[in-house]
Amino acid sequence: MGRYLIGRLLSLIFVLFAVSLIAFMLMHAVPGGPFAPDEKGRLPEATRVAQMKKYGLDKPIYVQYVRYIWHAVHLDFGVPFQSPTETVTGLIARTWPVTIKIGVPTIILAYTVGTALGLIAALRQNSIIDYVVSFTATLGIVLPNFVVAMWLILFFSVYLGWLEPGGWGKPQNYIMPVLAYSLAPMALVARYTRSCVLEVMRADYVRTARAKGLAENRVLFWHIGRNALIPLITILLPEIPNILTGSIFIESVFRIPGLGRFFVTSTQQRDYPMILALVLLIAAFWGITYIITDVLYTVLDPRIRIGGSAVRT
Amino acid sequence: MSDQATTAPVDPALPNATLANAGGRALVQEPRSALYYAGRRFLRQRLAMIGLVIVIILMIAGFGAPLLAPTNYADANLMDANQFPSHSHWMGTDTIGHDFLSRVMYGTRTSLIVGFAAVIVACLIGIPLGMLAGMKGGLADFLVMRLVEIMTAFPGLLFAIFLMTIFGAGVDKIILVIGLTSWVTLCRLMRAQLFTLREQEYVQAARAMGATELSIAVRHLLPNAIAPVIVAITLAIPTAIFAEAGLSFLGVGINEPTPSLGKMVADSAPYVRVYWHLGLFPTVAIALIMLGFSFIGDGLRDALDPRQN
Picture 1: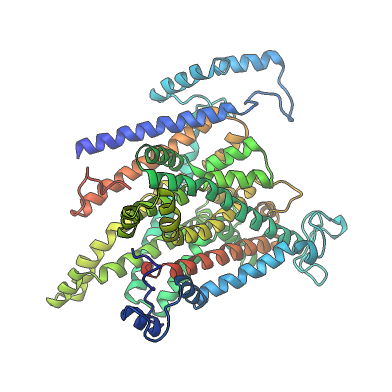
Picture 2 (picture 1 turned 120 degrees about the vertical axis):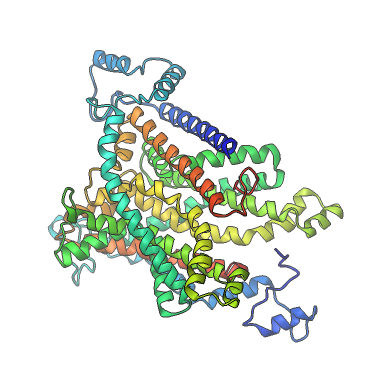
C-alpha cells in the first residue's frame, strides 16, 4: 500500500511537471506578452524594459521556467500581473473561499438529494416516480448551468420577484447559484445511484439474503446499499474538484466575486504567474482526488487489490 | 462480445428472428442485418424520435435561416430597439434593434455548424490515434496514453479559453479549438474497443488464415468497434455545442456580428430584469439543441448495443 501510494504520488508530480511545462511553453509560444504594445495603448519603452526585468521576463525561456519551478517548489508562485500589489497565493486565498462557499452547499445538496432520488427511482423501477427522476436527470445532465441559472433568474427574480438576480454577501444570494450549480451533479448522482442499485439488486447474494429470510431493511442497507456505493464513489468523487474549483458561468451570471473570473482575465491579460497557478491548482486537485478515489475503492471492495492491473484504467 | 455478422441480435419483441436464430438456420424468415434491427429499435424509442423531430426542426430553422428569417442577422433598426415580442417581431428586438427571432435562428445555425465541424475535427484526431494505440500496443500505446493523460490533467475549459485568446475569436477558430480539446474520449474508446476485440477468436482465426493486419483492421475490427464510437460521436455533438455556447458566453468565442446563442445569453444578463425575452429565447434554443442531440445519442446507444441496457 505504501509503495503504491508513493508510486502514485510520484506519477502525479510527473504529470504536474508536464502540465506546467506545456502551459509554460504555450504561454510563451504566442506572439506578444503581458507588457507588449496592444490596441489599448503602449507603455514607454523604458517602463516596459523595467517591467520585463522586474518579473524576469527578459531572461531566456528555459531560465524563466527553471526559476519558476524553483520558486514554486518553495511555494512562491509569484505576483499576478493583473493585481501587482498582492501575491498569487494571496489572491487565490482571497477569492477561492468565495467559490468554496458556493461549492460546499452544492456538493451537499447534489449528493444527498441525488442519492435519495436515485434510490427511490431504483426501488420503484418503471413507476411514474422512476420516469420523472430519469427525465429530470437527463435534463440536468444536458442543460448548461448558465441556461438553468438564467431560467432561475427569470422565474424567481423577474416573474415572482422574490430574489435579487445576483450579488454577494447576503444569505439569500446563495439560493439561486447553489440550485443552478447543483442540478448537473445531482442528476449525475441520481442516474448512477439508480443504475448501481438496480444492478446490485439482481445479484446472487441479494437473492440469497432474501431467501434466508433477512428483514427487507437489512437487505436494503447491508447488502444493496453497501455494494451500490462502490461504483458510485469512483464515478462521483472526481466531480468534487470540478465543483470546488468553481464555475465561471455561475459566478459570472450571479456576479459572485470568486475564483472563476480569473480563468478568463488571466488568459486575456497574459498573466503568466496566475495562469500557471490556476493550471497547477486544478491539476493537483484532480490528481489527488483520483488517488483518494482509487484507495477508497480498495478499502470498500476487498475483491480489488492494489498494485495489480485492476486499479489502472 | 459476439460477431454481429453471424449472430442476429436477440430481440424479445421480434419472435421470428429469435426463432430463426435459435434453430441455427432460417425457420420462418431470413434473419435480417444487424443494421435493420438497430434501425427498428431506434425508431421504436419515443424519446429518440422526439429528439430527431427537435433536431430536424432546428436544422430547418438554422440552416434555412437565410431564406426563412424575417431579416438578416446584422440588420438593426435602432428605432425598434428593446421591443417585447409582438406580431411584427415574434421574439421582440434586442438592445440595438435586431429582430430577435432572426438572431436566434442564425445563432442556432452557428451552434449547429460548430457542433458538427468540431466533432469532425475531434474524430480526425481521436480515432486514428485510438486505433494506432489499440492495434499496435507497446510504444505507440504508451505515447498515446501519456498524451491522453496530460490532456485529461490539463483543465479543459482553461485550455480552450487559452487557445481562443491565442487564436482570436471566430467560427473557424472555435471549431479548431473545440476539436483539439475534445478528441480524448473518442481516442480512449477506440483504443479500449480494439483491445477487447483483437484477442477475439474470429480475429485469431482470420490471422491464422493469413489475413493481413490491415484487412483485419478494416474487415473485422472496425465494423465491430464502430457502434459505441457512433454513439460517442453523436453525444459529442451536444458537448461541442455546449462548449461553443460557453466560450462565447465568456466573450472569447464568436464575435459580433456573427450571432452566437451563448453570447446572446451573456449580453442579455444586465437587461433581463426588464427585457425578459432576451434571456428566455436563446436559452430555450440552447436547451432544445442539447436535448435533441442527447435524446438521439441515448436512443442510438440503446439501439446499437442492446446488451448495455
